[in-house]
Image (cartoon, rainbow, N blue to C red; front, side, top):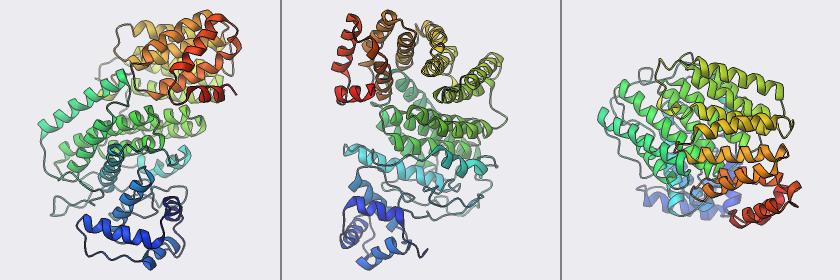
Length: 498
């Protein structure tokens, strides 16, 4: 008990619209349904949780998380309620507080519990057709300050954690948890192959259609991690969890579930670090940085990229470093820092060329090839062109090269982004004829994907068409975009022009 009001629980309680008596009755009813008929919560106890910061005993925090998740239509975790999850403290500094609502970083044995709880809640919302749009994104600076020291220390793997006789020891955070049991190398190989299938589907068709399948697979893996396997298998299983969490986050970002996406990126960084794969943790944080840039927060993205680069360890390959540099360059371009962007992109190109491929890249880096290098460069220069119009010509050169390299590439979403980068750069360079051509190529392909991000980028391009609205071709293009743009296109497009 802190003696201070639990402001996070108070805020959520206000949003839910319950009375304290109602919440007490709901807790008792839900707990009984979950096998805890002895629980007897009353109004005065609910008042103590909210007004004086009393932390209820298990299973009440889990019951409350489930109730608020159902009521608000978005994932609400134990940390969101302002409660500290029970478990081993781990080797970390105290980072609890208002700027760190999730209590980051999590202690080693809590990561699987958080993973399982969050995916379970996400699946519950998915089944009911609810959308998690009400949560708030944490600032990049808050994430990095909480995770910096933790990411730079040795991971607390099973060898460092206290061994107990019960192999199923874990905080059962979620409901309907996968029954923990030992698995072998063949099962892990099958899981690793499934990641490749999901990754290829996402790159080609976007995140909407397979997101639930990825979240469900991640939920299963979270349950598997509750069993203490031999170290070499446990590391591989953490690697699968990291890869699936990145995919779940990227797919969530792709369909506009931004707070959900950010949580998955943080889970991925934790999972990668538990598997002693620092480069993977850095790449996961770079995804969170890309999300921040997309949402217009490049300063937070730079905070995340500093941590991603410094925490990736000495084993990071030159090509992975090149990829991290391209994300940093995009953030710099978004802030209009042309000189810094050019320097960072130059370093990225040098690192990319320096990679002799004598060491096979990890599976999660195999999609960052020369086409992606040019595609990210085109995006950075196109973004900079909003501040320095002359940069549009360089953006066109990189976009053309990326498109040439993607002629036989199945990654349709990346090709769409290149079309939009090219069209946008052409509009900025006062070449509406060529811009119209590439914009229409993007439109033809976009109907075949479930990526909301492609439409977000198209809205940015649409804003650039305004000064050419008197041209017959561009007038027709604008009308065509208005007709096919999802989610109330006319209103959103008008706001984009303001």
